[in-house]
Structure formats: structure tokens, C-alpha cells
Amino acid sequence: MDGSFPFLRRYVFNSSDRIFKSRHISITDSGTNYFVHISDLYLDEKSSDVTFHVDDVELPAHSNVLAQRCRYFAAMFENGLFEARPKRIEIRGTSIDGFKQVLKWIYTGTIEFMSIESTFDFYRLADMYELSELLTGAIYFLRGVCTFDNVCYILNRAVLLSLCGLKNFTISVVKKDPCKILKHESFKQLSPDALNEILTRVVFPAADIDIFHAVVGWMKANPSKSAGFFDVLKNVALDSITVKDMVALPPNVLDAVVHLIRQNKTSGLTYCLKDENVALPKYGVKVITGGETFKEKAEDIKAHTSSEVGNLKHFENPFSLSWFCLFQFIQLLLHLFQLIEMVVNYFEFIPLLILAIFSSSIDAPDRKITMTRKLSDGSSSIKKDSGILKHLIGTDKNGILIDLGHRFELNSFKMQLVNAGENTYSYCIDVSEDKDTWTRAIDHSKYSCRSLQNLYFAPRSVRFIRICGTAPVNDIFKISSFEAFYKV
Image (cartoon, rainbow, N blue to C red; front, side, top):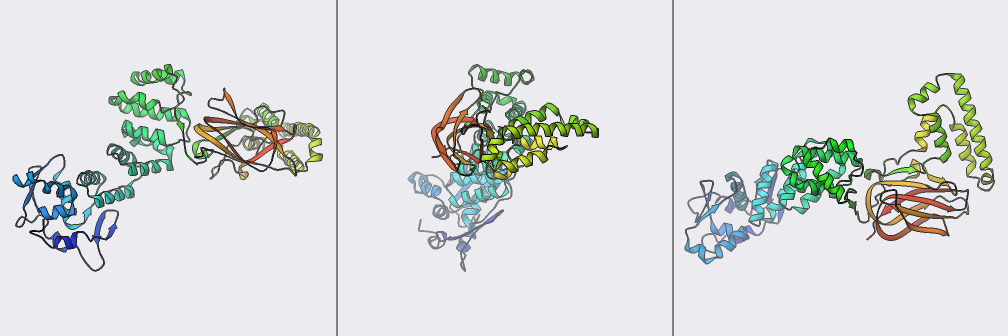
């Protein structure tokens, strides 16, 4: 190995300064070009002692260069059997252009990444020949060119080649806009394994039925992959599909759905996002009850306004508008008498009452939206600027009911109570997977609580959360923020 090119040791192992660009990788060092001598030997037949045979094309090479730059070839040349055979190396399963680029990398320390397809070809060869710098450069290039238009293709190849780092990166791209990927045409080109990567690692804010229809679309586009339909569908919630949906399914898809129903596996996945708040709009969280000022008011509005169109027709006549306002005012007076004791003790209800009186006008449709408003976008689930969640203690059994949008493994809640003077509150928190069977997770009905509540319980699968104040009766239990975690 020290024979033909003694200068190799001096130049090959000192490539300390590597600059990776989006389409070009270069290895340089300040003031010195370590590949100046080696690069002249690239494809030089005169001094070569090894020949690669690729696609019926012969490429000259030098065993010393290959051994110094590549551990794979070093091990090959150290094998005594190789010396006994003609130094002709057969390369199968790769293109001549791809192999020439890798060979150029060995000799010059540079390579051109011009396309995603060729880069994956380089990666496979670099992995085979243990060229770690080339592996790093290929991944850097792929991450730089990854967009929503090609992320499915890159994920397919990353899954096929078991590239964990690249898989994680592509999943992070999908997470930026999960619903967009469901509608993208390339979604139908995912492999079954790549599709499962998305379904098991990305929490969609879309409705379960929309996710189901997107997956069915993928199945219709890939009938030859029907053997994997069951493994894909078990990662999708099927509880919301109807008989009409099932009738429209292709036979191979219907078989997989029926099989899952018979096995009672229709709830989909339970996600476990460690140390991350899952009560967020990006995961589909919404408030079912407890978002209105008073529960009764939402019912009153519903009785008088079946739709926004109906509301507009109702207010066309000024005379009707006057009687409607009078009716609303009388109702507010009734509420005033019911709450008079609380107003005396808790001065915070005075501005609330004034707000309610001024709100009972022709803007009833807007009031309905406000009272039943879902969570607004933001970094936390329920912010003060999106409305305090509340309910009247002792009269509302549903309390504050939150739908997380999906099932999550949880063991902790963080909740901010709204203080009223020196008042303290008692409460309970129940959890459920299906809104039918409830489990008591937190029971603080015998405790006096105020301000921030850091709560812990045994890990369990949760989709619905019901928060009920238990004392003091006829007071209003209010929270300004709520977060849900799986703490590790």
C-alpha cells in the first residue's frame, strides 16, 4: 500500500474543512488543496492497477487511492485472495453515471447533486462503500430540496433505505400542514410503509372521516397493494363512517373495514406525544360545552335562530326587532334576579351582566358564535383572549367539555383557575375515549383550590375531558387556560 503513491498519506486524511452546498459538495482547506495530486489520477489508465466493470464499461482506478479513501476497498485489497485474481472488479446493480460520480468523489473530494433520484443512488453507493462524508452531503442536499411536492417521494425512499434521520425530517415537513398532504396528488404515491409512518406519527386536525376518505383514495389508487390495507386501516379511526360510506367502498377495502369492525378495532391510534401539550388547535381540539357565558342563553338563541338565514329574515321587520329585543331584555332581568346574591358577594359579575345586556341586540347570530366559539389559533390550547371557559356550579352536569380531536396517552393536566377575590373552588375532572364511558382522573371535590393547578394521574388513553366545578354551589367555575400532557 506504500508502493506506487507515497504522497497519498499526506493528502487524503487532512480534509478538515468541508463546505456543503445545496447542489455541490466541496472539500477544501485554507491555503492547501489536498486533492491536487489525487484528482489528476481520476480515470488515468497509465498508472492504474485496478479496473471496475460497470454496465459493460471499464473504469481504471488505483488500489492505493481506493484503500486510503475507502474502508470497503481497503478491506478488499487486504484480502490475500484478491492478489491471486486479476484486479478486475465487477459492479452490479448501479448505473455507470452513478458509480463514476462516487469514484470522482473518492479522487477529488467533490460531487454534484443534480437531482433527488441520482442523490439517492449516490447515497446507496456511499452507504455500501462506507463513505461517511458523502452520506452526510446527500442527506444535506435532500433536506434542502424537500418540499410538499416531493416529500412523499423522499419519504418513500427514506423508508425503503431505513434512513431514520431523513424520515424524521420529512415527517416534520408533513406536520407543518398535515391536511395539505392528505389532498396532495403525491399522497396516493406513498408506499404502504411510508403511509403508515405518516398515519402513526402525524396528528391531523382534520375530522376522522376526512382522514378515512383520504386513505380510501390511496387504496383505490393502489389496488395491487391490497394485502397491506388492513395494516393501514387499523391506524385510522373508523367510528365515524356510515353505512353510506361503506356501500361506496371497493370490495377489497370493504373487506378490511369489516374485518376491523369484527375485531372491535375501529378507534384508530392512541398517540403518545411525550412532554408536549396536545390540547392545541393544530391537533383538532375544540370546546363542546362551557364556552358560553351562560348555558341557558345559547339554548335561548337556538330556539329563536335556526340558521343565519332565518335570523336575517326575522330582523327584516323593525317591529319584530323591537319585540325581540324586549323579549331578550325580559330574559336578562330574570337572570338578574337569579344572580342577585352572587352580584352582592362577587362584584366581578357586574361588568359581565352589563356586557350581556348590551350584547342582546340584533347581533344575536354573532353572539351565538362567540358563546360557542372554538379555540383560536395560538401556541396554547385555551388562551384568555379566546374566551374564559366557565359553567354554573350545581346546575350544569356537563360542566366544561373538551374534545381533543384524537385519542392521546395522558397522565397530566395543567389548568389555571380564575380567582374571584379570596374565593376557592372544588372540582372534578373525568376523562373518556368515546364520551360514553367516563373515568374519574382528578377528584378535588373535597379540596379548596385556586390559581394554577398542576395535576397528575395514572397514564390512560383520553379523547374527551369533562371539568366540573363542585363548590361553591351557584357560583361560576372558570378557567383561563388548560393543557394536557404525557409527562415522562
